[in-house]
Amino acid sequence: MSWPTPWDTPMAKEALHGLEAERLYVIEQCTLAEIAGRLDVSARTLQTWKSRGDWDTKRRAYLASRRSFHEELYEFGRDLLANIREDLKEGREPGTGKLYTLGRLLGNLLKVKDYEDVAAKKEDVAKGLTPDIIRLIEKEIGLTGDDGQA
Image (cartoon, one colour):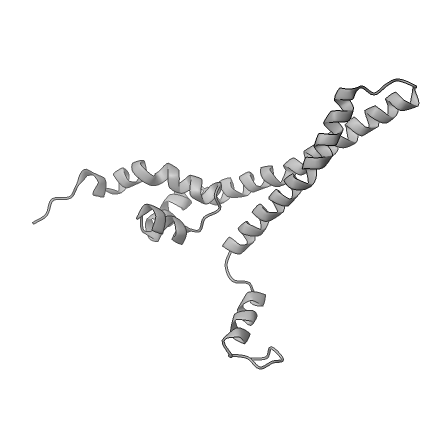
């Protein structure tokens, strides 16, 4: 007869891996299968934790906050540009700080937008196979004709 270790109980596993599993799901956008492999926790257990901790709501909120950051930067840039325009219109020197900030902002705005787009696509991929992907797989393995019909 083998005795269970203290880490074999469900509460101990959650105490040991729960926060990391949630971080992987919410922030890193990992699937439950990926997390199960990394942490040696069953997908069923992770599903329970996910439901109890409302990880899907947290994931959506995190992604929404990440996606909207470029919009905030864009709005800040518009306000800064309007301020510089007003300075020029009034015959005032806009100041090197404003011009430097606008230049740096414009250079990084597209990088932030690209990052957010990648994060959004990763979320979409994590949702599963789309009909288009299924058709492509069927075509690749010869389950459909050249016209894409099954």
